[in-house]
Amino acid sequence: MGYKTIIEDDIDVLVAGAGLGGTGAAFEARYWGQNKKIVIAEKANIDRSGAVAQGLYAINCYMGTRFGENNPEDHVRYARIDLMGMVREDLAFDMARHVDSAVHQFEDWGMPIMRNEKTGAYLREGRWQIMIHGESYKPLVAEAAKNSADKVFNRVCVTHLLMDEAKENRVAGAVGFNVRTGNYHDRVLLTVL
Amino acid sequence: MPTFVYMTRCDGCGQCVDICPSDIMHIDKGLRRAYNIEPNMCWECYSCVKACPHHAIDVRGYADFAPLGHSVRVHRDEEKGVIAWRIKFRNGKKDMDLLAPITTKPWGSGHPKLSEAAAPNDEVRKSELLYNEPKYVRMDDGGLHTLESNGLEIKEGVYY
Image 1 (tube, each protein chain N blue to C red):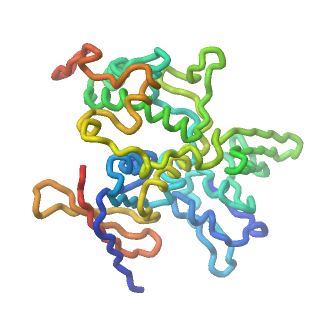
Image 2: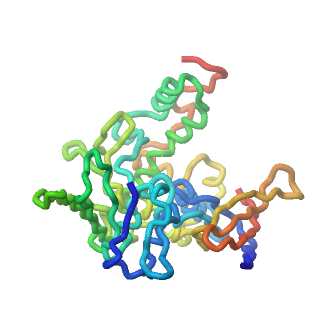
Image 3: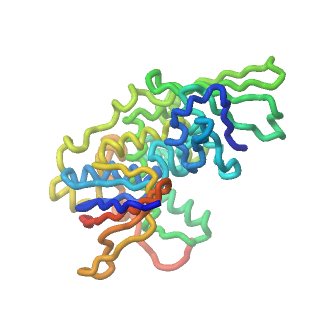
């Protein structure tokens, strides 16, 4: 049995692994690089892959600054105590200040989020959790990624990153194989970010 | 507990093969029916159960709360935007129906077309904002938080 080698050239942004994070990244990448070539490689099917494949009935991190509930620094304080100090606070703060806008966009895309009928705030089941009807959480975000990406390679597992000879410590491409056929996928990544 | 296929309902269309995150739903070449090739690697994620157009796939429950003979049926409908679950107990008498929305909009209609959206200008590119920000952070009520705006600074080391 021979294996084919498939080469995909001139990729500007390669998303290696498209769970909820990768599919979201492909969507955001289209905004920053509207004429760039965005390609997704995922070892399963992006409609149902990653930790949210089966749906998720809560969003476990939402500040609710809009409803006067928490500020990003409150979340950093929580994470610091929860992890006994072993936390990159700058990264936690950065994540916390952007997470609300992601949730508001999910609601725009059609995610059913439960609300308190009187106040209009999202219903919570914990200080950081909000309640959603999230059976189609992943398909909903995958839909956004499919609209944004130029090409989606399902069932392709990226195994190695290729380093750029011209510039030290820069990734220039990646290789992977199709988990079904064994076909070797070789693709070139031109970093834009 | 893993999925199994009702051979009389399956027509070998392969929707479950396409969707399975573990890649363990395969088509038997002789019978031309789907089957779970590696039951102990099944996540019980129900992706294949929902994807099957003939409702030919079911998942065995754990014996401690769901003795053999029960079934969990599911029908996911993107057009109607709902998912319906029906739990049948093995005595045949109890039958629980659960209905939940999967979307608030006609499927796929809520996504913006980013290739047609206004391109970010240089000022936006140099800022700390992501797409739709700062509007979407607090929905027009104030901008993005920064360490400075919140009266904070990064300190070295572990402290409480």
